[in-house]
View (cartoon, helix red, strand yellow):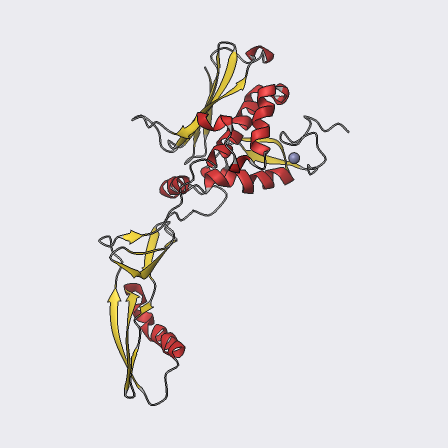
Length: 302
Ligand SMILES: [Zn+2]
């Protein structure tokens, strides 16, 4: 059977595809992408999701937006704050988690000073989070166990409790990817162009070079031409921060696809040198707005 264009839009003519086609979110589900296509096989949907989509959905700035907008997507809410230390005492470690009300809760990890031991006594200070006050016996017990105290020693425990409050500054390290996320943006542009232009698009030489960039296993370690067309958004005052936008437009007989993810990343990429290949594509173009909070998307001509 000739599988070409009857199946997966990434590897449709290869045997590596699984037989089953699955629902593919054009904007990844984790960022509230409501629009789907059905032409990606299950294997490549999973592979590209974990290898490519995650470069965008796990990007720190995107995680922050997902958390701030409380977008459920398919996954649980990300925690962009991670773990860190108190700025004014880097020996004190702070963890953070997302609670049931979907707020970030910071917590100080118990810490212990170096014990002062002599024949009579055994003394140290522990610092705990205020929320651990009721568990203090257990925490002390655990620490004492670890210290292997000699029997008969008097154990002086000097307790200090410390609360994380808004007056506390927490330091942590954040990695900001400046390039890899662009491959995931390119994947959105490829799928959105396919959605509007149909199967003819898959034979377009520009589409094939875009696909090659997405699937190139070395793309992350090399510069690719299309990368310079994708960048941080130039923020405009009327931007809706919870919307994704897609636009397909013709200009001088060529087609360009613009994609904006939240008001964070955007890219405008040439998707066809020959708009004439697509007679059903009307002058004036296509426009799509995805509301990531309601999950509603709206499509417009022109
Ligand atoms: Zn496939």
